[in-house]
Length: 65
Image (cartoon, rainbow, N blue to C red; front, side, top):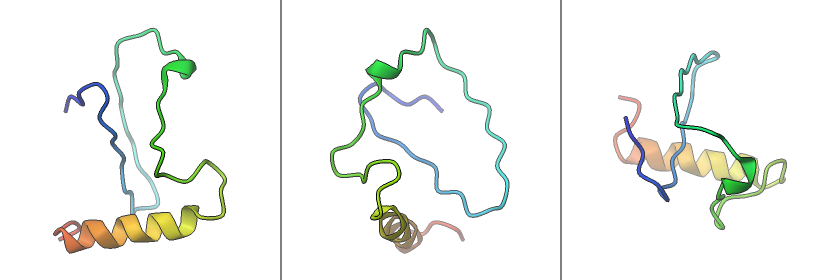
């Protein structure tokens, strides 16, 4: 899968383990990372509710069949 520039993406993992092999052109520069304004910050108390809604929305769209 190729994700175009300036497109937000995420993985919703329901298993205990995940093996992911990601390949990207470098160099990786953390300062180039753009986080969505509508997503809670890393470590924020709102993360649990945000993830619950993400999983609920994905199932409503037909995910996890």
